[in-house]
Image (cartoon, rainbow, N blue to C red):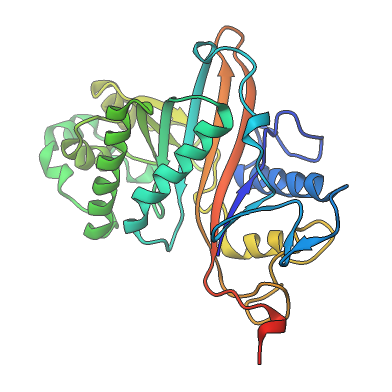
Length: 315
């Protein structure tokens, strides 16, 4: 069974949702999901339909937690008044072969939520990729003279992982060509990784978003290389592993502040049990251009239960 989790617009929810720029995005995500779940549970009928809470919605093998009413969402002004940025996190342990379907599913949810037909910028975060300023060369001239030699060197990443990133990027390029996405970006790419990656692209990343929490200053070598390749450098404070399985189980498990849908452990008694496997997380932000104000911000996430067994169905 699949669970689609949503925060709704966290800019219009109560103070329990953490929106501080100093907080990591996993704190914002979990607080947003929990707040939306609790708001949906309050005042909802206690009755369940075949074990499914009334404040959720089932479509085939997918359960929306809480139920999403796309007809009541959307932006307040015309589309051209906004700059819409989306960041898609591919999570650790999930086969790269699923990314094509996951990307389309995640993007379509955002388009439906905001009532738009395109996104200005999509940034993708690959699992296991993290920026380390210590890996950047100190001699900038040597870095650029190395050119193709550096592009073929390893940086602790398996070749299959790099190939899967390239294949994923080609799918993203098709979304640009279809008009759904206007620009693409990457996260956590140092200059060496960019050198290796760029020759395999038809549509080059316009943005490289890096986390500088450990070094505070962007290395000069990356600044020069990004400028040379016309790539804008942005910073962030997102977690790479933004939705771990344990956090997901706690959120969906029993308790006054949780969804109460999933058993507390894979083997525990409960309506649903089994291994929970988060698949992806997507964050969207809609900024009013002329005011620089964030009007709409939120998250969707997909998780799967490896096996679903109802307690009263057991022998």
